[in-house]
Length: 272
Image (cartoon, rainbow, N blue to C red; front, side, top):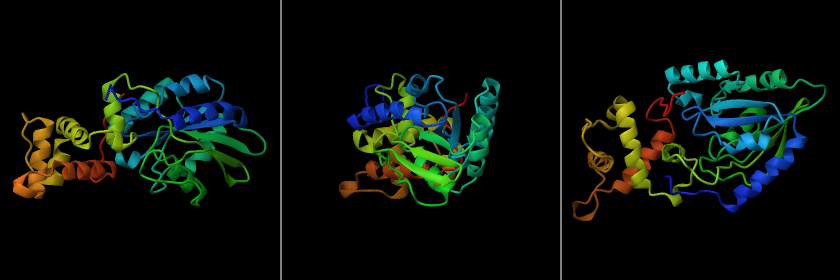
């Protein structure tokens, strides 16, 4: 992933809009993926916010993350004094804690205004919809759906500014790029899905082998490469094409979709 640069024009525009909008808000909500709390945080946000506004870190998809690893992240953030909120926007678990958490950072008379930021596909719009109880922000399991900013009124005391998800110009660490791609923060159409799935299989074999064997009913060869594992999984599923060729593309799509949808169980890809 080191060679992939995913920074289209609308992301640069969104970055400028975010800088200009800071003066309009009291606090910033940064939504990250609880499965990759480090990789899903845009390092450029530090330069944009730069102490200008208080920031609340929201670890979304906590119900899909490994609870033991999330405990480590919780202790890590507490030790650093980083305000954070764990939640799952799809079920709504934890979202009621947003207003109290924001008020603890910036209590004021009248309406509190918060800007919601984050990389693509971390569930910002789903989070906002769950907070408001109404489908006001465009939500999708694909990155890049929200293109412009929009103000959303939660109640008389809270307004949220939804912003487009933005990545940074270049992934210097290939592991960070891979993890973002695994979770769908980078559009699949600029990547080789089979290569990505092969990398994910290697990652899961090393960290959560039982999840793979339980889901796909296949013993894992400890010496096999990612492509060999992908072919074995495809063959096990009966994904065969003409002349007996294995349809690894179909298997790659299924594997990535099932991982992103939480069907492989609660998995975290990095520890503090």
